[in-house]
Image (tube, rainbow, N blue to C red; front, side):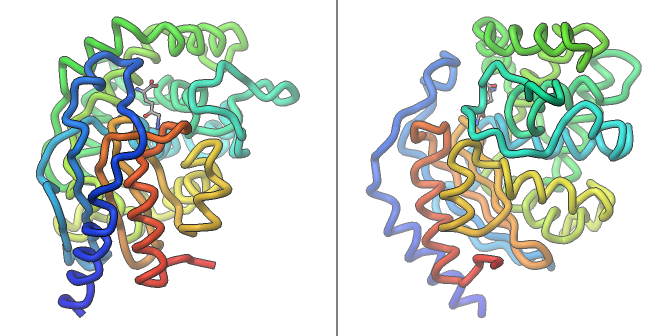
Amino acid sequence: MRNVVDAIIGEVYTLCRDNRAGALADYIPELAAVPADEFSLCLATSDGFVYEAGSSGTEFTIQSISKPLTYGLALADRGLEAVAEKIDVEPSGEPFNEISLDPVTERPRNPMINAGAITSASLIAGENPEDRFERLRRCYSTYAGRELTMNADVYASEARTGHRNRAIGHMLRSFDIITGDPDEAVDLYFRQCSVNVTCRDLALMAATLANNGTNPLTREEALAPALVERVLSVMTSCGMYDAAGDWITQVGLPAKSGVGGGVLAVLPGQIGIAVHSPRLDSHGNSVRGVQACRELSRRLELHFL
Ligand code: DON
C-alpha cells in the first residue's frame, strides 16, 4: 500500500508541477513577497502514516485555514447553541471578504467567510488578548503535533493594511454580533492568520480532524469528537467560499483554503490531505492546490459521495 500511495502522490505532484496559472495574494504586502513556485503535497492517514512530495517542510502562513480551527475552539468554549446564535451555517456564495450579514437573521452566514471568522475569534475565552491568542496557538499546535509560532512580519503587514476586516469588525459590533471591542477581535483574527505552518503540519491537522479530533501521532485531543462533525460540515458547505459547489462536485471532501496558498482536505475516518502552492485563482484558492486535490481524489477514489 505504501508504495502505491507514494507512487500516486509522486504522479500527481509531477502532473501539477508545471502549472503556473494564478497570482500571488498581493493585498497583504508581505504575501506578495513569498516564493511563488513553492509546491508541496502531503497526505497523512488517521492512523499516522505520512506521505510527502515537494518541499513539505517549508513554512508559510496558515491564513484562512485557521478559521475552522478557531470555530472549533469557540464551539468548545461557548457550546454549539451559543455559537449558532452568532454565526449561521449557510453557504454565502460570496467572496471571503464580503462585508455582509444575512438580511433576515442578521448573523454572518457561516464561520468560513471573514465576518463569521472574526465573530469566532470574538468568542474565544481568555483573560486578555495575549491569553486568547496563546490558547489559539496552543490549540493549532495540538492539531499539528508540534509547537507553532506566529510570523510577525505577516501579522504587521496585515494589521497595517486590513481596513476591510476592521470595517467587518465594526459592522459586527453595530449589530451586536460582537459585544466586546471589535478591534480586539480583528487583531486576534490577524494573529491567527499569521501562524506559520508547513504542508506536513496541515496534513496532520487534517488527519486529526479525520481521526475524530485526536492527533494520530501524539494521541492528544485537539477537538472533542462531538464538535468535529460540526466543523467538517461547515467546511463541506462553505470551506472553498464561492467555489464550494465546484469543489464538492469535483473533489468531494470537506476542505479549507488560505491565501497563503495552503489547502487542507479531510476524508472523515481515513485521510488528511494538504497542498501548498501560493498562486491563487479568483476565489482566493490555490490553483495547484485545487488541481492536486482533484487529481488525488480521482486516483485514490476519495469523493465521499
Ligand atoms: O482576511 C484576510 O485577509 C486573510 N488574512 C485571510 C484570508 C484568506 O486566507 C482567504 N482564503 N482563501
